[in-house]
Length: 168
Ligand SMILES: [Zn+2]
Image: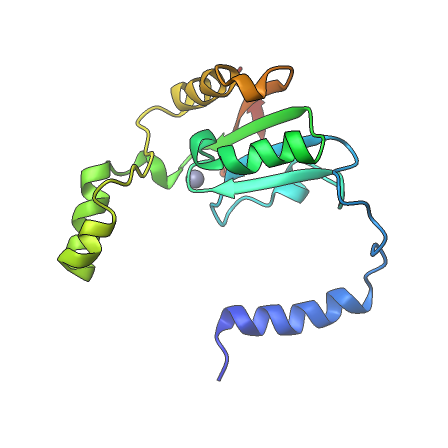
């Protein structure tokens, strides 16, 4: 018996592949930019931000964290030629709802002390203020030597309306 995720993948991919025609795209993103956004299931970056296939890197993690995405951003720019990053956090983000100690407490409760030790030094990178978090991530990226010459903008996407607005 397959899971819902497997079922979606197998059946959906069959239909997708049957009408797929874009097998000849180049590896480097054609429009030379990267979008960093949250893994939140309510965000459809390709649709919401109008990204054609092959045009841009879309990097996702919990909270659209620049620090968490740094490895991918360096690869995107230095190896694959992107020159612009759009950081898009969003309203209703789960990262606004807990602090490091809460997450560690949940792991300890659910999984025991061995698991708790594994996350003891982990910064889950939660934040308390959405706009401030966007600004801080942009400042952090601009402070990195490897990111010089790269254009950064920061945005907030509203999961309630589908609208994105620029913050910085
Ligand atoms: Zn989020």
